[in-house]
Picture 1 (cartoon, helix red, strand yellow):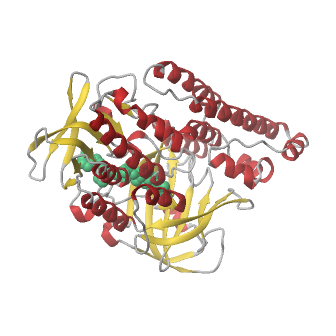
Picture 2: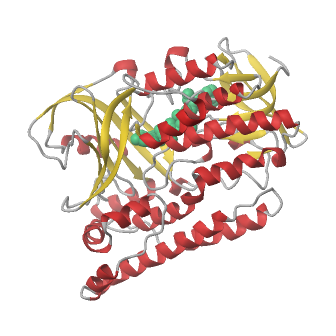
Picture 3: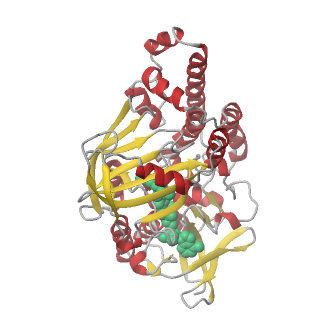
Amino acid sequence: MTDRYDIVVAGAGLAGSLAAAAAAKNGAKVLLLDRNKEPEVGKKTNWGWVCGDAVANSHLQFIKSKLDISFSNPELDYRVDGVIALSPDMKNRFLFDGEGYILNRPLFEAKLLKYAIKNGAEYRSEFEVEGPVIENNSVVGIFGKDSEKKHVEAHAKVVIDALGVATTLRRKLPHNPYVDKEVDIADVESTGRFIYEFDADHVDLNWYDPKNALIHLNQDISPGGYGWVFPKSNNKVNIGIGVQKESLEIRNKKFNKKDTLHTLMDEYIRSNPVLKNLRLFNEHNNGKGYWSVAVRRQMDSLVFNGYIGAGDSMAMPNPISAGGIGPAMVAGILAGENAAKAVHKGDTTVSGLWDYNIEFNESYGHKTAGLEVFRVYLQSLNNELINYGMKNFLSTKEAEDLSYGRVPELSLASKFKMVLKGASNINAFANLVYVVRKMKELNEIYANYPKSPEGFEKWREVARVPVEEAKAKFRPSPV
Ligand SMILES: Cc1cc2nc3c(=O)[nH]c(=O)nc-3n(C[C@H](O)[C@H](O)[C@H](O)COP(=O)(O)OP(=O)(O)OC[C@H]3O[C@@H](n4cnc5c(N)ncnc54)[C@H](O)[C@@H]3O)c2cc1C
C-alpha cells in the first residue's frame, strides 16, 4: 500500500465508518482500517463493544439529514422515552425527556461499515495501526501490521484518527501547538458494563424502568461517576458504572475499604432488588467488559498538518453524561466531509483543515468546556450535598439546561430556600452559582472560536483559564 489514497481513516468504529462514508461520498479515495475481523467491526477491545449504547434520536436524525441513512430494529434494539437521573437517596429525580434508543451495537456498527463500503471506501480488517508517518512536520500516512503481521505503510494526504480513547496516532504526533497528546487521568472514567437477561422480581421504577434509561448518582457506589440501568429488548438490561480513580481512592481511604471497579460493579448488580436470576447475555462475546471514557472538553484543536481526529480519540464524549456516540457520529461525518474538501482544494495543512474545527465547534463542541467545569463541581459533592442540591438547588428545567450545556438562570425560589438552611449548603449553592458563571464565560469564549489557526494559541490560553480555575477550586470529595 503506497501513496494511493487521498484519505486513510484509522479505526472503523462509529466515527471512522461515518468519516469514511462521508469522505468517499464527497469523491475522495478512501482506505478504512480496523484491527478487528470484519464481523466484529467497531469492537473496542477484547472485552467487546463496551458501552451503555444509549443514543438520542436527534443524533440519528443528524446522520439521516447528512447521509440519508435510516435506522430501525434490529440495530435500534430498544426505544426509551428519556433519561432519569436519581439522587443518591432516590427521593429526587430529574427527567430528561427526549426519545432515544439502546443500540444493538454490533449490528449498528456493521450497518455503518456496509454504508462506508457502498459509498466506495476500501476496507481492510485485521490491520493494527501503530503510528503516524511524519514528514516535514506533517502526517503523511500511517504504519502498522497487516493480518499477516507484516509491517505496512499506507500513505495519504489526510489521516483521520478514529481509533478511540487509546489512540496510537494522537499520542505519537510531533510536539505541536494544536492537538494535545495526553489526557489527564483525572478526566477519565474507568467503566464496567455487563449485559444480562433477567427476571423482574417486582416493579420498582427506581431500579429498573422499562420506559426510561436510569442513572444513579451515588458517590459511594460509583465515586466520581454514576451507575446506569438501561432497558433492552426481551428482558435484557445494559448495566454499568463509571468511577474516577482519585474519587475511588479517597472514598476507600476514608472507609478503610479496598474496593476496585470490579468489586463495585459486582456490588451494584447484586444490590439491584428488581433484577433477579441474572444470566449473562454473551451474544457476539459482548456480555461483560471494562473500558475507559474521557470526560473533558474535546481537544482544543482537532486538526494538525495532514491530520484530523474524530470521536473518542479527541475526547469528545459529553463531560457529564459520558455520551460519546452522538459526538463521534457528528464528528465522523464532518471530518470526512472536510478532509475531502481539503484534498480537493489541495491544502491539507492545519489551515486547509481548519473549517472542521469550526463546524464541530458549532455543531457540538461549544458547550463541552462548560460541561467539564460542571462535572468537576459535581465530583466535589458528597451524597448528602447531591441529595440536598437535587431537592433544593435545581429545578428539572435547570438541570436539563445544564446537562445540555445551556446556562440556566437560577431561580430566586431556590436562593431563598438556601438562606434558611445551614452554612455549608449555602456554600455549595454559592459554588453552583460560581459554576454557572464559569459556564457562561466559557460559552462566550467558545462562541469566539478562531476562524483560522492565526489567533488560536492566544484563544487557547484564554479558554484554559476558567477550566483551570474551577479545577483548582473544586477537588474530588466523594465522602
Ligand atoms: C462503559 C461505557 C459506556 C458508555 N455508554 C455510552 C452511552 O450509553 N451512550 C453514549 O453516547 N456513549 C457512551 N459511551 C461512549 C461511547 O461508547 C464512545 O464515545 C464511542 O464508542 C466512540 O466511538 P469512536 O468511533 O470514537 O471510538 P470507538 O468506538 O472506540 O472505535 C474505535 C475503533 O478503532 C479500532 N482501533 C482502536 N485501536 C486500533 C488500532 N491501533 N489499530 C486498528 N484499529 C484500532 C477499535 O477496535 C474500534 O473498532 C460509553 C463508553 C463506555 C466505555
